[in-house]
Length: 125
Image (cartoon, rainbow, N blue to C red; front, top):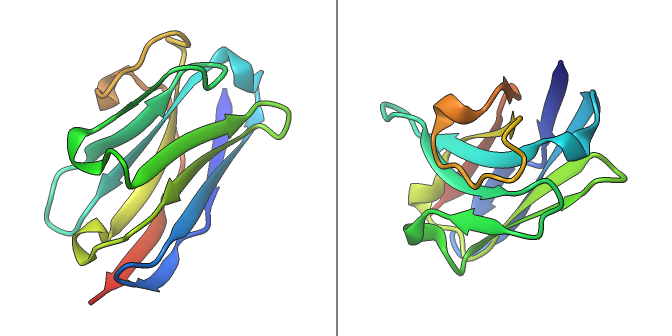
């Protein structure tokens, strides 16, 4: 079992930046690939970014490439999502998730085994 807790969300103006953190407890953090998803009001949860067990490989949804960066620190058991040049359409609840498929870069929520409770990001225009 892995427990995940996100932090770092908040209200930011368009063009600003935020860094989300997701800290894990429980089993060995480096045994998991980690991902970020988001869900806007009235919309389905969508994939944002993922990285393999050591952060050596990453994958992003096409529309966010260049603005968002995923990284991780296995000693701190934390995965990060740096979000730059934020837009109002980035407003959503952001979730981190852990997958036992530690070498896989998956954009499918069904391949993630553990989820955090989410953190709200609101971008004002």
